[in-house]
Structure formats: C-alpha cells, structure tokens
Amino acid sequence: MKAIRFFKKNAVITILCFSAFLGVASGQTANNIMPAPWSPVMSFIENKGQFDGRDWQGSKIEYGVDYNSLYVFFTKKGLTYRYDRFIRNPGRSKERPHEPKRINLSELTSVSWIGANSNTELIASDKISPYYSYCFTDKE
Image (tube, rainbow, N blue to C red):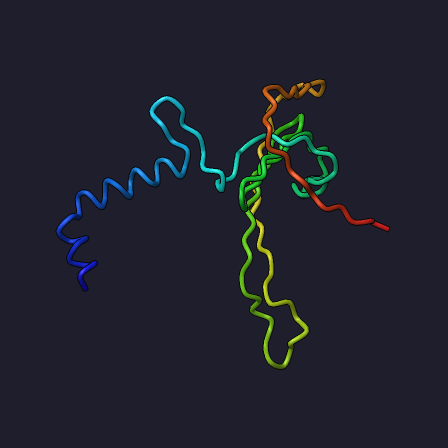
C-alpha cells in the first residue's frame, strides 16, 4: 500500500524515470536512433529457395521482405504482398482430434508493372549485419 501511495505522489518523476529507462533500453538517443534488439529489422532478403512458390504466381522471386507475418516478394515483373495469420482450426473437435489445432490463412495481393522490361536487374546494396536462417526440406 505504501508503494502505491509513493507512486501516486511521485507520478511525474515515476513517468520520467520509466520513459528514460525505455529510451535507454531500446537504444534511442538524441543523435542515434536504433531499433531495439528485440524488434525485427525490415530488409531485402535474396531468395535462395526459401520464398519459392510463396507468391502463388509461379514467378521467379528475386528478393523478399520477411517482417513478422507480412511478406513482400519482388520479381522482375512486379511484387506480391502476403499476409499470414494462424487461427484455431474450426474443423477440429473432440470427434476429430487428429485435425491440426491451428491453420494458416494467407491473403495475397499481386501487383504487375505495366510494360515492365523483362531484362530488369535487381541490384542489392547497403548490406546489413543481421542474417536470416531458413529450414529447407527435401522435396523428394
């Protein structure tokens, strides 16, 4: 009870200290604004097979952006936005316990460049230090 009264009396100081702590914890300073170490970094990732077929277009994906449940796939003719979310499987019941507990719902929007040059070259620059790891399975 004393702690609650202390925080009520010193609310402004408490808020300022907490804000300062959050600013330091997330790496933000006046001269250098950096994302917190736990926040995802949005970057272009070269496709080495991990994005194949994920745009449902059959296009050759050159690069992708993997940001939580949002993906953006870049091809020479356009791009595809993909949003994945997992929901409880409505087909699962006590009578059907073999069904998966959750299922993936994907929403896709594809954009094609009108009159796109088929000789377009996507060039990567400004490499970043974080890296991504993907698991591949044998398709046979």
